[in-house]
Image 1 (cartoon, rainbow, N blue to C red):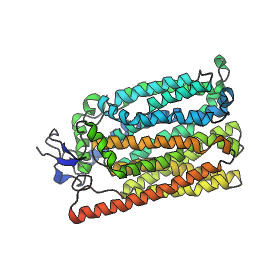
Image 2: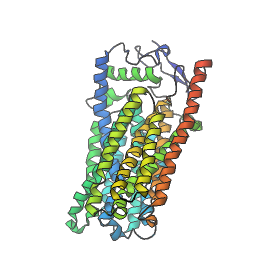
Image 3: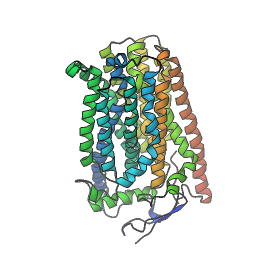
Image 4: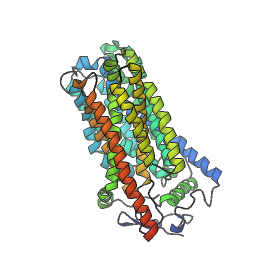
Length: 491
């Protein structure tokens, strides 16, 4: 039997419990397709089975998650603002940002729980929980009640996105994960594209049971969420070392061992270390982790502000009708999906991450002045395409950038929590930058979004300088990168 001992977060990572066909350290970072059991064609078939089951299920559940957390603007213009008097002071902005307070606070412990409890029961349970909360939204009579429900929604949703990001990263090698993240987020983005059209259909139920159309948006989407959560319990899969016995009709033991071998050849951290609080928290001292998190904060500030305020901007700033404002949300997100997959393909194909982030930020930077300052609606709507595309394409790009440049299971868990947690802080910022008192032009929000994209470019530049220096030092004097011989940062 071959052992792997790596210096991992200042602690030993000992994989003696790997089976005898596990690779030794000398084979790490060799061609990961050189497997002693399966041919390249058989390997592709196994990976595609993982794609169809894991990425599709996580993406579909994230689609529901994103729809539920961003359906406020659709309900707002469907009558909720008038009935609950959300036009008074900062009420609308308050109920937007209250979601993100528990969403940020509960992410680190939730990421630990997804490893301890298992992704199937944990992710499915919280999905049903927030679905039930969404149903409750439809029956509120006062704005402070919906504010409290937004807090509860944040508690339930806190563990979902970082849990999915962490789970996906354990199944794929570094240069397989970019496209998978993009497909995962692309399926989720369908919610943003379709939510307006779905909301327009559901609001036609206005008057049934003496409830307004905005109430039926919440009730019906909540019922859908509960059903998806129940289905997710059977469709989700566990971590690779447990999936053969705990996942329904998925890979067998030998196929799961292949996944473990493949990940170990790529970065040597396929199996989890025992949990200690020190091992979980020590990676927080690594400054580059906060660089990744700050990038994600900047990206989500723009994406959330677009998600929360685009229907309102289309209605109030560009003068479109209610129905048109709901439906015109979809095309920009379609463009975003195309852009995010193409850039993810290029990133995986050429083993680059930072340049993809910079390119997408530039696309958004071109679109923001057009959206904010152009005179004609057609030009401003074209700007919406560029902003929505560039900002949303950078979500999976930022996730892949982080996933490629860290090692270790608990470091990966903490980084998933800090990344998505700062994304939640970006959600708070996104809920505030487009303020109701700045209507109809929302100039401060435009400038804030421009500043966020400029900051992304600056941070990527700083990280790139450090990564190049660390890689050259490793090659020149043998200094270990991430505590592992042969590991190199992805630029």
